[in-house]
Length: 188
Image (tube, rainbow, N blue to C red; front, side, top):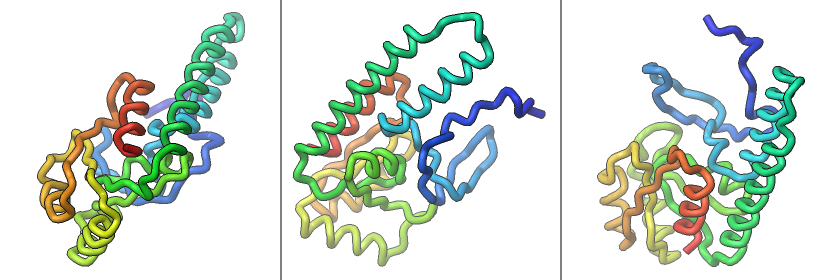
């Protein structure tokens, strides 16, 4: 059993988004009513960093972590600035992705995420047809999928649209570089 007094809620202060994310966690298949992908948005990362800093200061009050936090905070602000510029300079009306992992990024930077996967399940034929028709009309050139899913999950949709498949990894360890890469790919 976990000692709940040692659990830090990093999402405290983040306006969470309803979702039906379905994934495996500690070997168990889970369905949640809240989209858990908060780490994909610099604005959420900023809140998570503040929550972490406050928790560490509360647990270890005799050490000064303010310089390290200040440095991290500046890096997050720079990341936010880069992503804001990329999104503001993009003319793409939306992006298409298999699994809706970029919901917070989309919300925080005024983008529209169109997910192929629907409510944590394979899409219906009607849902796919709607996405394909819209994407053809709008000239979409890319369909994204996460590295934990096979390319085949989007290949036929991409082919029907006349788009390329693009693999991304929202779980990459270098989160700052990864977010810039993803934002660049979805806004080009």
